[in-house]
Length: 202
Image (cartoon, rainbow, N blue to C red):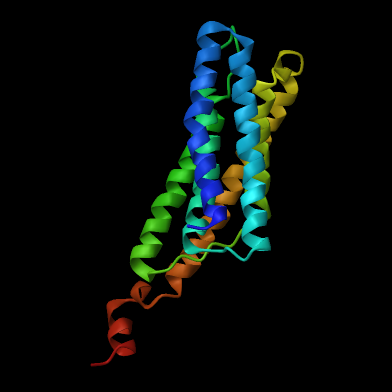
């Protein structure tokens, strides 16, 4: 268990606290809970950069880290987006359901695809893409925009950010699907039965 992985696990442990603080704020209206939720989200986001720096600086790359790091990102963002998708008009703005559906649908599709590739090929090669990073930034911006309550005076900007997040999320999902199809297409198991027999003579 490397230091970088410990930091990643700490990020994951912050997620329940983040969600609970949002729910407490919605119920009570106490600004302290909103500020704590905002602070927790910010700390988790900062630690994302910290664990990456530690892994690179001290050469602590590991297979576990390649799984935990993106998982921590997804859990943080999806939990915030799902909670903020409920009606909280008296306290907080609401994330459009079409954005929530796009994000969750894309993640479910990629998760199922990753399992299929792993079972078929035995190894998954993930190539980071700019569209995926843009989608993450815009999703995070949507959550922060609402928690900072900027949407009270700039609702139109929240709409634009949400549209950008949905488009980049959908596009990145399609690109990852194409990458997965290439990995499956180059594996012998994707060939017709006759070709497999020819490639693997007894």
